[in-house]
Image (tube, rainbow, N blue to C red; front, side):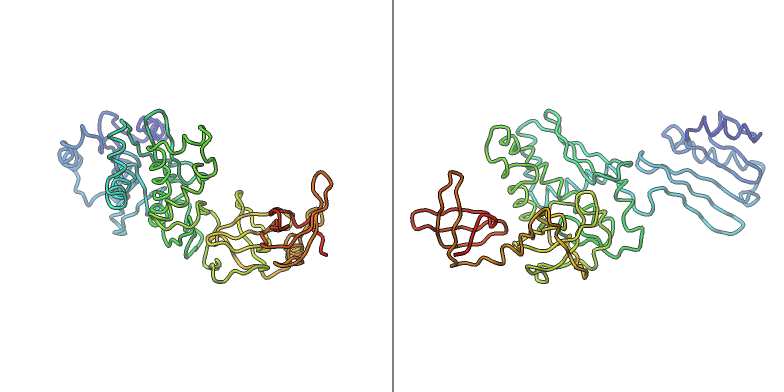
Amino acid sequence: MTDSELYNYLNNFNIPFDSNKSWFRIGDSFMLDSFYQCGKAIESKQKIISKCFEKDSIHTLKKYVLPINILNEHWILFVIDVKSQFIYTFNSYGRFMFSTRQDRKICLKYDEIFFTSEISKICKEKGRSINYDVNHNSRKVAGKHIKVNNVHTIQISNGLIQSLFLNGEKQLSINGLTVYDRLEAVQALIEHELIHLYMGIQDLTRKIKEGEGKMYYSPHGKLFQELVFKYFEHTDYKHNLTSGDSTNQLTKEQCYVGMNISFNDNTDKIVKGIILKCNPRRVSVQIENGTIYNVGYSNLRPYDGKVIITDNKPNLLNIRDKFHTGMTVKFTTKIGDIITGKIIKTNPKTAKIDTTTSVYTVPYSMLTLL
């Protein structure tokens, strides 16, 4: 609410005020408006206060209402209750606030410590600039790296950060890490976006358009995953901040093929499935409708119930269990030839068949035991 709106509001209730002043009285209460925090008023703060109490003692009023500006980005309200001797604060962001200045300071410190100022040097050499932004409204997108021409922007969602740890959560999982408060969540988000920035200022993602290694150079491709693990040991590129308390999450050592688990998909819906394969950082999971997901260990939770795979898609785990290395099988090619060979390797969806003359990769559904 602006000061003019506040004055009009008070006028409707017949509360006397002087719009030329940076203060007014409401009954036995004293209030400073937001102009008190502006630059023009800073040098005259003492004069304003002394003028307010020329006739009255500071102890004659019951309440003092003081709006406080934080880094020119946010207002909080202080209310001093003289009678009860309490000071109340009203802050829509809660105890932890994240600002553009803090975003910039943290990113510069990361660049200095982890990248030995390489990001700053590359930007200087290539004529790039970096902006730091905080979105106070969004609660869907945790962070962004935006590139417009030669300007790169790192944006962190303060709105989402403020929504964390409000329901008694002891810990959350983000990017494969466990965090215990909002500050640690912010750090993990910035680390993730810094890798996007690091790739962006070196134009590594442009190689996708040039046809070089689409999967390797994509925003969350293999190169990104290698870098974010190398610098910050993130084992997952998904934030999963809205997945709830991660106290019961599974570790890599606890997972095994055939285990019933649950996890949150991209829409934060809880889905159930069966582990098909355990990889170094993720597992292959077939959910109840037959779809297969690659899920990070940090997003897995044990599921005690029974997982039933629907009939419209085959249960690949049951099919794969029928085939083992060394078995002799046959399959039919697209042109109708029947090929016989031995299984030399089993994968989640396919098997490698050695026919002595060549090696084929064949889906299990096409194989027949001999």
